[in-house]
Every structure is written in C-alpha cells, then in structure tokens.
Image (tube, rainbow, N blue to C red; front, side, top):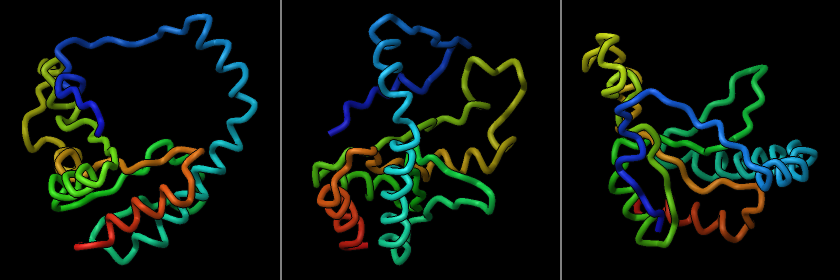
Length: 154
C-alpha cells in the first residue's frame, strides 16, 4: 500500500524545492546518460497498458500527433476512482492521486480570486484521475497483474 499523506497536496504557502545534494548529483550523473532508455522502457509499458485497457471503462492517456510522451506517470480517469483504487489497493497495487484539490483552489492562491467553477476541467479531473504503476524496471508479470486486476469486475 502507498503511504498517503493527505496534507501533501494542500498548499498554504507558495514555495519551491530546489535541493540537490552531492549524493543526488552523483546518482544523476550516472542515470542521466540512461534517460533515453528509461523513457523508451516507459513508452513500451504504456503501449501495453494502452492496448490491454482500451476495453475497460477507464479513460486512458492520449498522445497527440507529433507528441512524444515520456509517461513519467501513467494517469487514467475513472468515474468510480475510489472504488477502482480500493480494488487495486486490496490487490496490493499502489496508486497515486495527484492534486486532489486543483491548484487554483489552493489556499495559497486565494488572492487570485478563483472560485469553485472557475476552471471546470481541472476540477473535473481532480476527482477522477489517478496513476497506476509505471516504472522502467516494471516486469511483464507485474504489469500483467495490474492489467488483470483492472480488467476483472469492471
């Protein structure tokens, strides 16, 4: 199960994270030359998800013409997000909900004057999107398990 901190996406102050210590820099120096291979591996796994999940009720990511998606996250949409997340969690599969409160409705941006309904697409997606496992080292067996769990009982 994912350790979920509900306060992670509730912003009271505008800030930034610009920490890069020596250990992170050393790892980056090793991993940066491998970036293209990591992206290609993610794209291969995304292609498997795209094909296998097209017959489910999930709304899958779209890659526009001339766009080269890196699939850092594989985000899907569901009208029944909480039920799908619970099903995956019960099967031992981690998911991620990002920005459950749209940025324009965060307390730190109150001064901009946005209200509920100001950006309806962002608000709609904040209640329906979540990420399923996606990483370059993901095995075919791990991915098949995620797919099978999403396909059963849909």
